[in-house]
Every structure is written in structure tokens, then in C-alpha cells.
Length: 313
Image 1: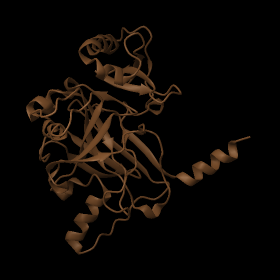
Image 2 (image 1 turned 90 degrees about the vertical axis):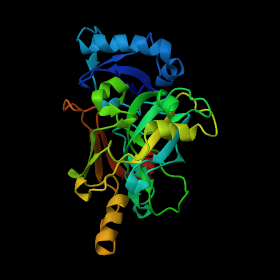
Image 3 (image 1 turned 180 degrees about the vertical axis):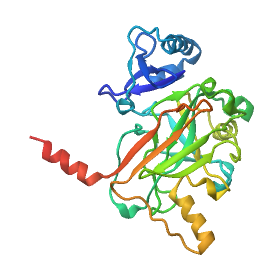
Image 4 (image 1 turned 45 degrees about the vertical axis):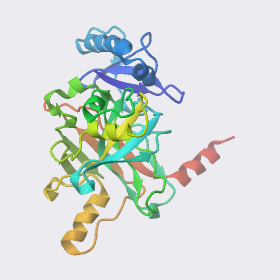
């Protein structure tokens, strides 16, 4: 099944079930109102949502409506934790995790606002999972069993800030999907599909997410559980998806600049500017968009703040 969160004026939004082709949606009212409720009581609530999903996919849901990604918040707008790995070889390929911001995750079509272009605005196209409860000390195999939903992420980064500095909140594609939606592409904790990145309408990356993921999601979750219990509703991210083959393009500008430095001695590609756009998407083996697309513009925080002040009476 595919789940999304519609805006309703609250911080956590309203849970909706989305059809496999992303054409139709149905409020989950009467089953659950928020995704965190589902994650807290997965074994009881998920089967009810699955039944609604099947009805929706068969075109028999009486109160279905057209799905609009622009109405979506992040699938889980506020997470208990967002732990970000570096699972790909060019990013490190090890089960290391950093703490990312999780208190205001962005929806797929929300503008990404920054204080200055001089901060080195960069994107980071990646994958993530939402977990159930994971006991402290769990093995990688046991941790993998805790994966409830898959996510597509864009981890915004400000490269001019010193290492360890707090980074911006990530954005997420409109829907979170259960493992069965990926079909045979989900194998042993890795998603074997291509991740396409477009910057200002130009395709800059089509990286394979599976083969070069040095550690799988079970290993990343187990790393998080070495020192504590992982709460249901935690997000574990892969880090930027990238391949050793440079012809596959790149999932972040930092990745591209590193390749340029190796090839010519210095990086040439500049970081993002206000007015730039970014689109990130994964298509399944059936050709359909698996998560829907992240489709964001880069904008000035100061201009937005000034506009709000002018609008006040």
C-alpha cells in the first residue's frame, strides 16, 4: 500500500491511502488520522489500511478523490528521529549514522528556503525507511524485520558550513510505500531501482540504488540500536545514492565536484542558486512512479519573511 499525509492546518496532517498508480486517494478516517498512529500499532492498523488500499486499487472506494501531491506534507512530518547514513561506496559505504533534523520535514512540493546562496546550497537524493520499535542490541537481520515503509528523500545540505553544523530539514516524496509495492526490486534490505535527479529540468543523475549500497538498511538500523532502543516512527536514511561509474551522473553537487576535482584538479560545478528547481523520482520495474516525485524550488527565506510582513494588516 501507499500512504500520504494531506495538509489540514495541523502539524501532523491527515493520513490518506493512495492508489498504486498515484491517481486516486482516500482518507483513512475511521482507521487512523496520522501516520504515527499506524506505526505505533502497526499489526492492528496496517491490515485495515491494506484492505482500504485494495478497494481503492480496484476502483471500488466510494469516497475516493484525485490525488494531488501539492497537497502533501512529508509522509511523516515530525519523526522521533532521523538518522542519516553514508551507505554508498563514494560516500563511505559504512554503517555510520549522523543525527539529522526531524522536527519539520518538508513535503514534496514545498519550496526549500535558505538565508543566503553563499551557504553552498546542495541537494542529496537518497532513500530512507520508517521503522517500528527496534530493541537495543538487535542484529541486522532482526532490525531489517522492523522496516515498515520505504521513503524517497532529498537531504538538503549547506556545504559552506563547518562539519558537524546543523543542516536543513530534508524533503520527502509524497507517498511512503510498503515493501510489497517494490516487488522483486526490494532484496535483502536494498532497493534495486534507478534514482533519477533533474536540476533545472536537466537530468543530472540516474544512479542505481541497489548494487553499490555497501551496507543494507538492516545494518544501518542495527547500528542505531547499538546504544538505544529505536522508537517506532524513526527514519533511517541511506545518504546520497551514488555510483562509481561517473556516466550514471550524480545525486548531489558535492559528489559531482569531487569527481571534477579528481579529473581536472578542481571542482567546476557551482552550488544551487535561488530560483533553481530540483526533481527526484524513482520508477518501478512496471514503469510507474513508486513514491511520486520530489519537485522543489530553491528560494530566499528573507524574501518570504518580507512578504509575510507586508501581508499583515
